[in-house]
Image (cartoon, rainbow, N blue to C red):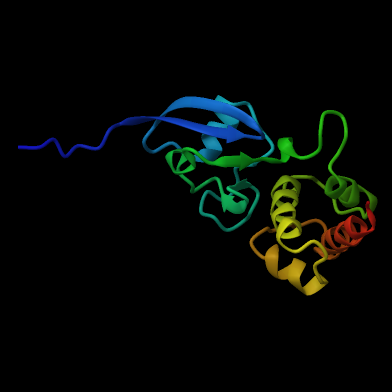
Length: 165
């Protein structure tokens, strides 16, 4: 009779913020827990645990995902980008600069999720209209800003990217 049990752990390799990572993870490990607890990347926040608030948003293969419900084994062989991977060294990403310039950062709890979700939009659509930004960020909740400043920051960053050489 064949063994039909599922392994309790898996060896995975992935790229996190451009760095190759190899880990053994429990089969049920969530990407959020691996990022925060195993890799020390605290930018993605734990909040709802049911994929509705966006505080845990990271990019997997360029697409926004809720790390609180995404199994780490699903990221095996893929590129993961967290807010810590934006910018380079001491230099902020232009999107981070735009958030600061437009006052789109209040308490900061939702900011990392908003930033990476907006980064995915700008990669797909470099100069989005405000309506597109609103639509794209609909899964990211914020109780402080009312979204207007976030939308302004993303639109301004997109507009500025068209002006860069």
